Amino acid sequence: MWSNAVLLLQCLVAWLAASVGASYLPLASWDLYLDTLHTVLFKHLEGAWEWSPASAFLGGLLGVPDRAVLHTTFHAIFIAVLVLRLGRQAVLAKWVGCAYLFGAWFVLASGVYLGTVNAEVANEVSLAAADAYTTPWHWLVYALAGQSDWAYPILVYNFYKGLYILYAYPLIFLPIVRAHLVATADAGAPWARVLVFLVPLYNYVAVWLVVTPRLTRFVTHSQVRARLPPHTPNPNPNPNQTSPLTRLALTLGLALA
Image (cartoon, rainbow, N blue to C red; front, side, top):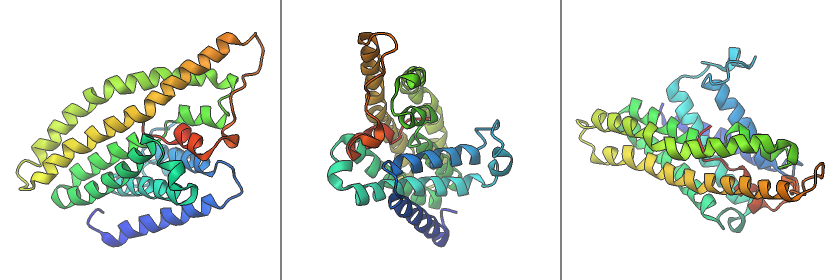
């Protein structure tokens, strides 16, 4: 799949058409809805949501190489369209937007190169990176709920999940990186050995950039709840009424689901 330039280009064009088309829909938060559909789609494709009726059809529909290319191309196109439609000042004003833009295309380019060295390693590196760039369902639910008070339990879950990811990410990926270093040792491609280490390391930095504001959001929401009298509505802003920059910080996903 990585060596098939035509199929790779078809994935890019298809995601470009879908993303640009979604951006012209009469929706205030088209990026949030498209990101949600993307998460739902790939969770089904990888068979992670076996409880869903759609998993009977979507689960196992695509092989690992197809999912790796399809998923990494989505993130590269999605962030590019965000910059195009929302503007550079809105998307790239904070480190999270810059990290996403560079990281998504860096992962895609790394997958293409690693695919010429070891296709299996390319698939594993790319899928792991794409999953890291996928917004977890619990944050999407909180954002779709307008950060309202009734969604606070989901935010609590997101807080502990975020702490777990920051702690567990190195423990999960160190053995995988060692295995990839061994797999590419005899390939005669020193840059491949650099990439199998550098891509997960960059993703971990990006995870920190996105998870940290979400942890801070838990603290601020908790403080608001503590100050409000019982049964008082939480005056948190609805994402549909916030600026593109705020929506970006709230909805873009680099954390593992």
